[in-house]
Image 1 (tube, one colour):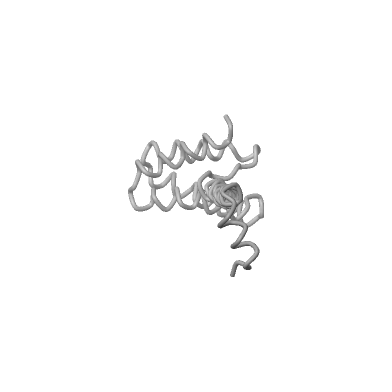
Image 2: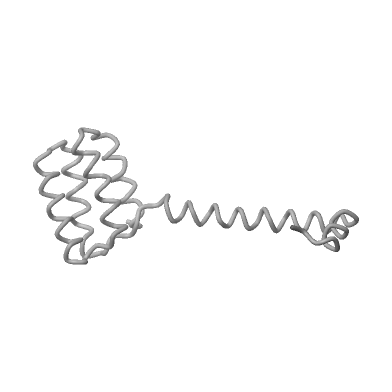
Amino acid sequence: MIGTDTQRFLSKNSFGRWLALSCAVAVMAGIGIGLVRAFGEPPKIPAAHLRYVQLLSTAVSSRDASRVARMNDLFRSLHDEEKLTDSQWKAIGKILDMAKVDQWDHAMAACEKLKAAQGD
């Protein structure tokens, strides 16, 4: 609840209203940008494992279910050995899941997005 002094200030002072609205918009924009960055971009993969991302991309682009299964085992073991974080495993797991249900085009698009996020 806004106090009476604040209400009086905002109602009589157009600059105060503009300032309060500007601050609210800036805060909301900052939250929105943070959410997009947190959930919109794939995570960085350790440099030592980038070759596996390329192998995953090859398995998906060739639409080879047996290669995808091998990549699943490889990435699962890297995660189990704590060489991949949960967010890295989750991003890769989504690609693997799409490939497992023959959503090859979506899986390939996700691979490309993951590779692009690595900065190469």
